[in-house]
Image (cartoon, rainbow, N blue to C red):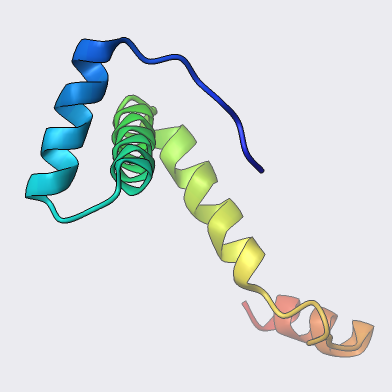
Length: 84
């Protein structure tokens, strides 16, 4: 997808200089900068979560890793519950 954005000349000049020093394109530099910014905001947001919210997020991540095709029968399920 192609989008045009307006950038003032001073900022564009700085982007071109940084891109040249980093041996990157201006587009690549901007993409990298936005990715870095998003990562920092995600880290900041995670840092501000309560312990309970972090536990919930961890549980959600574990649940997303589960193989939904891996099932057990009802008998096996209740047998496992009774063992504990």
